Image (tube, rainbow, N blue to C red; front, top):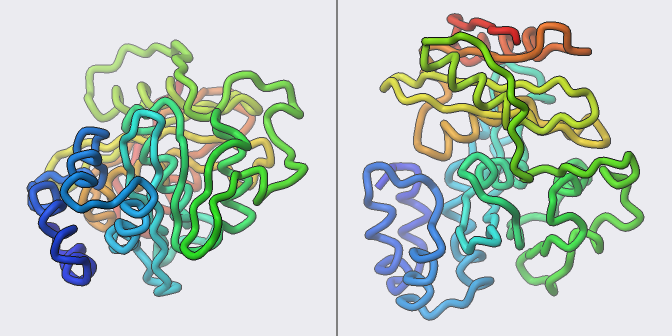
Length: 294
């Protein structure tokens, strides 16, 4: 079991510990449970969908990186597939606060990067802030997304974000988590650059069309790729680097031990992710950053 889970795991009921241990003890636990695994855990623990999601929040929060706030937030995203995805807030010392990732953003992006097609609900241990409510409003599950909070009645995103501004107001038909392939091609042979380009091809940027992707090489050689997730309100947009860092972190990697990184983005885009990507990676101790343009 990854050391970050030890404390939270020790505070769970013995029944739930027994149900979770076969999965958490796997050396490559991906901070998610498939629908089949979730059903097996429910059967062994006696918990229903919502109770299990609430019970898993401390484990999700254990994935948080909080060198600035020391405030740990966990989130569990339930896909329409039945899969459960961990999310946690992430902060980076030396980088501007705008580069932080909120737990809800983390869980949503984690599910997206794992191939989930849509979300049914998100469970979080603190009320979603306005930033996260707007970010989730970009999803293809839209205002019907179920929001679960401890001690509160179930509600929808529409309840938390009434009279919302979103993609529909700008006549956008392709929404976040819809499957896309933008078809950009480059003659690339290096796997890290190929991964960055593949991520750019699946990014969500219907407003700027500045599709972009970032691929990271971790200390053990594993590659993690993230896609840009743009928002109708612009500011809640999640850069591709943060998406890649989400996948690296929830997978048990160390964001301070990145060997190399590649950004893929359009040559003539209306804006570039290059400066922010390079600066944030420098704050994380990674200086070997390159860019491929299509």
